[in-house]
Length: 154
Image (cartoon, rainbow, N blue to C red; front, side):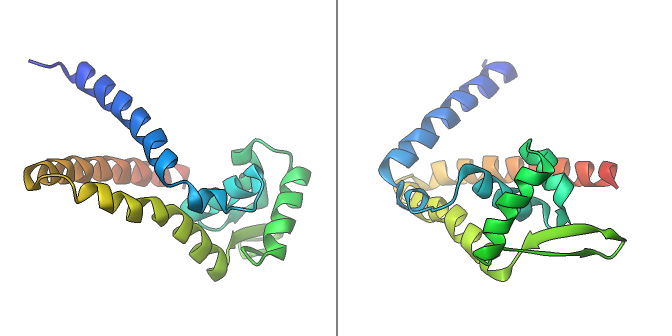
């Protein structure tokens, strides 16, 4: 019988091999990105966190507030983010994705999922069912973790 720890380690190894395999066959959406790494990271933070204070973006990126402002200036110039006063503290500024920014990051992130559909089509129905069950369980655990984190940060 396979131990829980062995299964986790095996899945981690599999995930590590899947990433490079997919990137090697379909890197085009990511190669067309004309943003610096800090700019891309800022968009990812805003995509997953929603509107946050500029200081929080700086903290999450591990950058100074001044460097973060420069990153956000470029993204704002590209109409990917917008700044607005924080209604709970008029001295603070919130930054959020614009509709254009949301569409841009969603297209980028979903490109891999669309391409992965071609691979999934090659699996048997029983393998697809097993994968679906596992991915559903993984999604549930991730959602619970996000809910717990959100509740503790409030």
